[in-house]
Image (cartoon, rainbow, N blue to C red; front, side):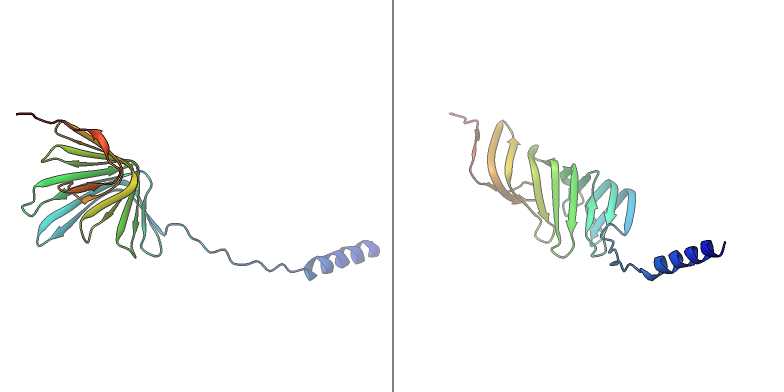
Length: 173
């Protein structure tokens, strides 16, 4: 029995003598998660942007991820709906005050009945511009314009497409 006790304590001392130091794990994931969010941005008591999303992840640096998509409505000075933007996935970069939509990104000008489709689009709220270097399709009253890269106002009221191709109706009256 004494040999068993000596062997047990010897193994216990050997096992206790080895300490393993591990580096702390730094969590990089979201700090908060919000579901079924609807938010309004207003200026001078007038709604400018309405945002709806099923899920938001908020990070330590105030960046936000919208992994299940995003829907935005843009309103004019009188509070009338001007345009909408939808994306399958979105991300807000706080430091740059810039948004990125990915997947099936669609911008519609509801007044002019124009529509932009692309796979990635950036929006800068400060100057109310949208842009991309990806392939775009713009449909406007009878015309379909294709291109690689574009810049536009957020309501598609004025746009510039790089590397343009497409079908444009011409009236010969």
